[in-house]
Image (cartoon, rainbow, N blue to C red; front, side, top):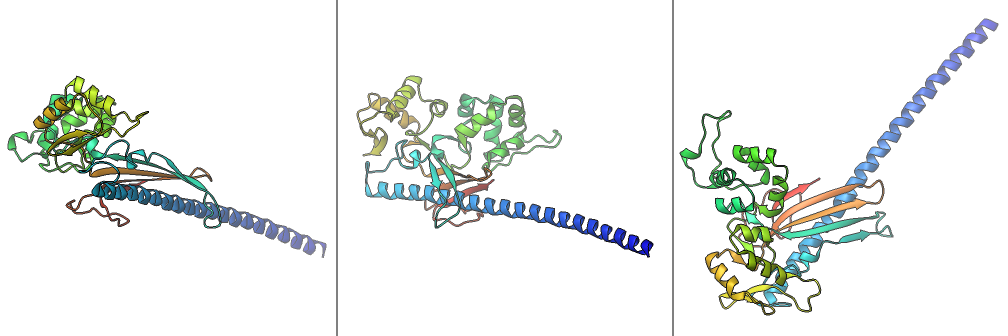
Length: 328
């Protein structure tokens, strides 16, 4: 009888141990599932906040275009400059938890026009060389997108190389060009330079004198003294009146007197792509949640033009033409 009772006690203890292990395993599994669900929920919230930031930025661009068409504020014809609302959009939008939403976080915005950069799909080899590439790499980029020429092919290479003879769609395509790939690998500072000063989103040569960097203005041949004058004129810090260039009566004008206006007009006569309006913009919205520091970033390239090319597939449809969309 005692042996029987002892066996029952041992079996009961084993059952309790097994049930305890199962309970711990189930509890741990549910805890992991709860964390995964919370992480997905936070990611969805951050994505929604970033999309809201993109929509706000696009609203700024649409409002700016409408104001330019109406001539308010600013001159007619229109101009885009560093004092525009879209150019001042590098700010954080705060979301506080409340009755409508339980989300606490912020969205940081940045809008830059592509016309401040040198368009790779229309640049000359000399311009790319002036920007910092070697003559061989610069010519290889031009050969990559210009009309087909059998002399530009290298069938003896491993693997054989033939240029695309079509426009670059992304900067990553540059790695498909052997001469450029070698330079990117040997010069770590080259890729950041290309990211900052070049673009693949301009269908033809176009440059906004109100926003283009001095490096880009130098690449297209603007003299150093004229570049310095333009940069000093565009400075908005402490300026009592808006300071930018616009076009009227077939020539460049300035909102306030510019001492080198004749030299600037002469330069434009030799470089017609120089203008005062931007149509293509990169919009970046990065959302951050206060809890656990979740972040989500959307980078969109948009064009506010009626004749933009076919829109690439994007997860959302906007009124502006979306040329590129990346989420991370």
